[in-house]
Every structure is written in structure tokens, then in C-alpha cells.
Image 1 (cartoon, rainbow, N blue to C red):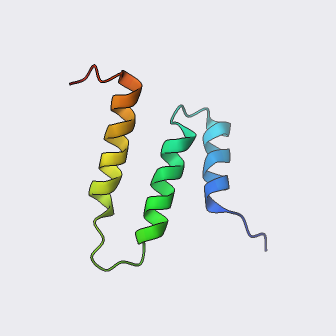
Image 2: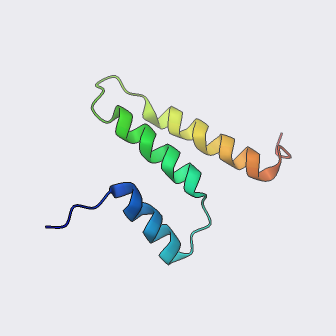
Length: 65
């Protein structure tokens, strides 16, 4: 059995598929999910949404406001 780092796999698949999402956003989302996956009261969906919204605003140069 091969033990692969899930983040490495995500980034490799992203590259192979030509997805334009930043490595930083994928890494941040992965780390957020990993850090809170066993918290009973986790609210990672709102935190994930905030990460994504921040990335979108940074890419758009805050022109969406």
C-alpha cells in the first residue's frame, strides 16, 4: 500500500486537470478541513466560504465590492 499525502495528491490532480484554482487556496482549505475534521461543533463550511470569498476578491482586485 502506498501512503500518499492527500494535499500532494490534490495539487497533482489539479495540475493534471488544468484547474486554475490557486495552490494556496487548495492548501488553505485542506488545512482548515484537516484541523477541524474531528471537532463536534465545527463550522468549517462558513470558514471555507470565507477563504474562498477572500481568494475571489484578491483575484478580482476587490472590484466586486
